[in-house]
Image (cartoon, rainbow, N blue to C red):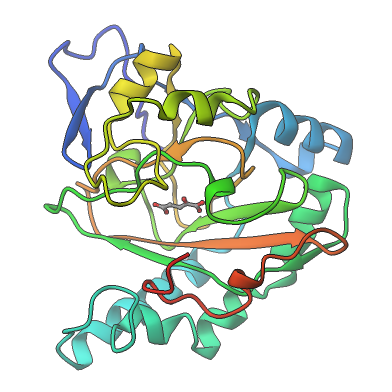
Length: 279
Ligand SMILES: O=C(O)CCC(=O)C(=O)O
C-alpha cells in the first residue's frame, strides 16, 4: 500500500479538490483512517472501535479477484452499446447492473451481513437499495459532505453501511473520507449547516461541497486511506463523509447497507436503487 499521507515534506502548495473546491493536502486537513484486523480483535473491541471512531476499515476483506471481476463485468456493459441515459437511471448500465444476478450475488454474500452483526451485536437484515457510484477523472464531481441519516432513517446501531470500492481506489481516486469524530456530537450536522456553502443550492441534503470550509469550521481533519480491491470500510449513519474528485482512474463503488432486524424500516429503501428515485 502506497503512503498517501501528507507530511512535513509535502509542498505547502499541494492541493486536492472535491467538486472542484480546493483543500490543501497537508497534515492540518488530512489524517489516516485507522485499520482494523478482524482476526486480531474480539467482538467487544470491534464494537468499541465502531462506536468510538464511527467507522471500521478492513483490509483484504474480500478476494480482490472477485471484486475486480465484478468491476470488469460492470465496465464491459459500456462496450456493448452507446449510453444516453444519465448515470443510474433506466437505460444506463448501472441501473441494469444493480438488478443483475452477479451484483445481487455479490452484495448478498453472507460475510457482509455477518460483519454488520459482529459490529452492532444485533441481528441485521440487508437493505435492498444499493447505490452503485461511478466517477471519472477529469470531471470535478464527488460526494459532498453529508451524513447518511439525512437520506435513511436509523441510528448507528440500526443502520450500517459497508462501503465497497469495486477495484483499487486511492484517496485521489475518490475513496470515502470521514470528518474525524463528527459522529460524536448529534447536533454537529445541524449546527454546521447554517451558512454552509453549497454548489447546488437546490439540493439541501448535503451539508457542503467545500471540505476545507467544513474542516476549518469544525477544526477537524478528513481521515482517508488508499483502498485496494477487497478493502471495505463500514460506517455509522451519523458520521460526516465525502470524497475527493477522482483523478487517478475510474472509481466504481457500492454502498451495501443493513438495518437492525427488529429496528425501524425505511420503506423508501426496499426497492432496487435508481439514481432518479429521489432518495
Ligand atoms: O461512494 C460515495 O461517493 C458515497 C458513498 C456514501 O455516501 C455512503 O456509502 O454512505
